[in-house]
Length: 419
Image (cartoon, rainbow, N blue to C red; front, side, top):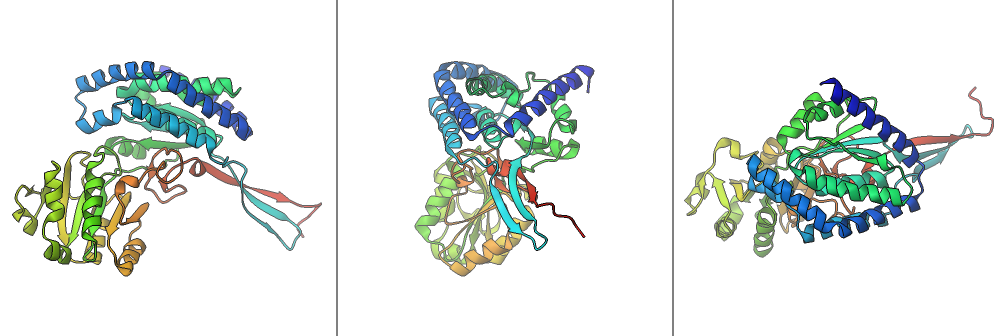
C-alpha cells in the first residue's frame, strides 16, 4: 500500500471511530429521524440517482460486465422506491441497542445482565449493487455502528449519490456525518487498506462474488462475516406436490437470476421423476433456461451435457445444473459436497423427509416448499440486510440490525466482595 492510501484510511478510520462513540449512546429517536430523513432525500434525488446510474451502466458496459452483474447494477424508479421502503422499514424497527438479552441473580448477591451493544465500526466491501449503500448504512446506523463503505468501481456514481442522501439524513438528525462514510476513490488499494485496518475497523462484511470474498478471507486481519457465493439447491422429493414443485422451481431459478438466492442446482428424486416425468426440466427449458445435466436427464430434448464443475457453480444466469438422486439422503450428500452453506429448499409433503433435510444440513437457510429467492432480509421481516452470512460464528443467514450487535455484561452489587 502507498502512503496516500494509508493516510486516507487513517483519516476515515479515526473519524468513524469517533462517530461510533457518539452513535453508541444516540437515542432511538435520533436514529429514526436520520433514517426517515435519508429516505426522503433519496426519493427527492431520484432523478439525480438515475442520471448517475446511467454513467455507471456505461462504465459497466465498457468494462464488459456480465448480464447478471449489469442487472445488479441497474436502478430504475421501482428499485429506488424499494430503497426508500427499505430505509423506512429499518427506521420503524425496534432499536436493537441496549436490549436485555438475559438477566439473573447470583447467590453472592450480584445481579448480572447481558445487554446488546454496537459492534463499533463496520467495514462493508461490495460489488455492483448501489442499493447496498443504503441498506448497509441504514442497518449499521440502527445498530449504533459507524460504517465505512467501499462500493465497486462500477457503481461509483450511483453509490455516491445515495451516500449523499444518507449524510443528509444524519445531518438533519444532528448525528455525526462521518457515521456513514463512502471511500471516495475507485482505487482498489483501499480494499487492502480496509482489510488491514485493525485499529479502525471491528468487522468486515464482504458482499460480492467468489473472487471478492476469497480476497477478503485471504488478506483480512480484521474479523470477517463470511458471505460465500450462493450455490443454492432445490430438491424435489418423491413426495413433492407436482404443482407446488413446478411453481417453486421456476421462481427459484428465473425470478431474478443475478441474486445470491437464485437456485443453481435442481435435484430430482428418481421416484418423482418416474411418476411425473421431466416436467420440471421442461418448464425450465420453456422459460429459456439452459439445463446442464447428465445420465437419464440428457434424454430430455434441449438439455446439454454438464461439466463436472457445473455442480457447485454459481451461474447467476439463466443456467441451472440438474441431477437425479436416490432419495433425501442422496440429495443431502450432494448438497454437502457441492453447496456453499447458503440456502437449500426441499419440496415435499412428507414431514419426516423435511425434518431429516432440516436436521442433517447445516446451511444458513433451509426451506420447505418455498423458493430460495426468499433468502433475503427484507423477506424475513428485517427491513433490509447487509448480506447472507454463511459462516458459523456470530451472525448466520440474513445480517440485519440485530446481527450487527454484540453484547456486554452489566454486573451490579452492593459493596459485594469475593471471599
